[in-house]
Length: 572
Image: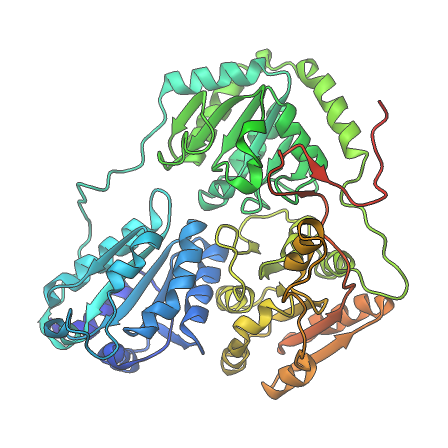
């Protein structure tokens, strides 16, 4: 079957089972856009900015485990997409980005809207390709999806010159691939499993440290079986929330810069850290010299570059975390008689002392809305079942601390790159994937304005997400750092001249609400979520001075947390 390169692109996406492509047209991609117009198998979603396209594809991918797909044009099209590509890369999210490129004879001659897409994306993609001839399109797209979704997932860029999308060749989509330079994920070995289980069974102060790899590998059931069989305390990273249920008695909260006191102290005092699909990033460790001084490190990750990168592993296992946990559980079942709960009873007693401090406590006053209160009420109104996206800042931490996630793929946030503007377009992608589910975007008045034009996309495609704007009239996290570290010099963190968000939402054709009184919070949320077919923008006017606690400040160890003034202390 003879097809143009543009038709081959679209048919290749169909072969990969792609439902949606998020994109924005431009000259170098117009042959591909014309091919989309002539078929009905793959739906193209017209966003209002290329960054919005990447975040929407990202949200779709995080909530489904399937790769998100993006189509942009050359020059500013691909450069606008770089932020979203980097966001996906930092959090290991599978994504395939198709970018138009100027005609092949013009490459390197500073043609109109030419940019070196391969060069500029190289630091923030798992791999990238520049198509050289029309015959390569189908196989390259097949490679892109395989690379993006296997091993440690990530974004892959396919840059396609415009003249190649007009060329014609026979369409044959490959059934399989052989990539000599891209080996299959390594399997764990019996001796590794034996060594790991010996360490686990002899630990007196163990902690299970689970990250986003648990979510990516769909290993939540294996993790829960492992933790419950041993009775170990378990903590999740920001990216791993939902991997272990918030309500489970073995769960001791999120750890890290704004984690719970008990999670951070347990990591510091542990004699064994079982790290599963996590990478010991700086938000977890604090200063490396103070990190877990007495702990043996058992580190499991599919990516060998993560092992020993920040923290030296005593027992490294490079393999898929789901496969390793399955092997762990099999060995523990065989050695059930060797599991001794008494060995960790004193450890749990100490952890319960730390938990008694209630490190997330706050006081909801009568005259001003606390942002934590809004998130807690959101959890109540949605039954903890909503898909929750967030932007980046204080509101992100409040969502992580107070929503209480019990399932994977429902917490959608930019963890590694910390991208403001992520929340709303990510919520769009989630809503495309889960039409019948509640989707809430928790944001702030600074972040929401970065990609607020996507309200138009929500209107066009009838995406009734609920926007929870925690409006404190500040870049809240910047202001908090300025309060703690810059002697309250609030340089450019106050958001002056804000729009009327209610009127703005209505201008886009949506429902707008402003909530000022704490007594109105629950009722407003219930009213908003009862509107199943409308996007509701909820502008909550919150306490300007509220800070996120606990907090590990720059230069401190992970056990040196700033607590809320007035917090309880442990008696000596």
